[in-house]
Length: 410
Ligand SMILES: *Cc1c(COP(=O)(O)O)cnc(C)c1O
Image (cartoon, rainbow, N blue to C red; front, top):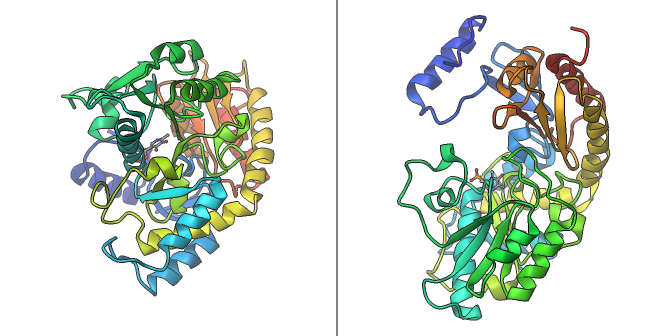
């Protein structure tokens, strides 16, 4: 039960309703949000909370960014859905603008992150058979341990997280798992049957794990050598979170395909995409893949506004400067309840010292101080504030964290 004894009546009633009628596949913190603006949310009791999770990076531009709300509202007044049976006036513009922003050639629009990854895997397999010449049914895709790519049956087939995978078999074959960040293991796993290497440039769900310097460069080189595709899952790491459009940009590495999602929908609608090489995405012909909602006018209008926000570089700049500040301050907590800090840009995984609060206990204690954040695994907190957060607010959040993990006088 999530219900804490000191919950207000209205909060408790609404949580109770959730628990009775919605499946228990999440364990939310006991706060019920009613409104939000920028980096702040307000609960049903009218209490403000600073959002340090930002919808797992789906809210990079904050809650209800005025330009995104305007784009959505304008499109709501025009046309919202056509299906791909017909053309509409937003799709081509969205795809061109996203391709220009990302330095790629072609865009396959989908809705959720999991669908984007699924789509990239389908494209990679088809490319392996049609272009690379891998014998039928023999294509392999190399993935990393501790990955998170979504929740479909195929994606959990190669998850190494038992909670995500157990009891969902029989599993999709054709995946080879290697330890993350280990270039030698990757080299040993790639064969002439390898269609692609699928990798998160930074593993978010695993605890914001940054691979060793040079790993992604080496992954690129190994793929080139073997004639395999490099697929970067940038659903959480991309779109300014680390200070660049792609986290891969830090190593000046280019992927053949990228998956995008989360922030691409501006926190308003689910929008995802595979972006990349035209000769690879070009293997898809009419009828071979699709989605009723993928590339719908509302999604494209919001996606275009997201691309506009990213094209100024302002959010990348904020992630870089606020991120430097965040990491400096978090480093100061090492040995004061914090065992390790990882990350890049405005994104951090904070391992709490054993013996102190667990990630869940720390999140609950932060909630009581008006700060929202969430554990990933037992002793790690993931910090990913909206990129619009004010530095003074960020400092308040870090001060609260310091108190909760025991570094500051209580
Ligand atoms: C969130 C996430 C996904 C899945 O996205 P959904 O929209 O939840 O399906 C895939 N890959 C990564 C790296 C993610 O962070």
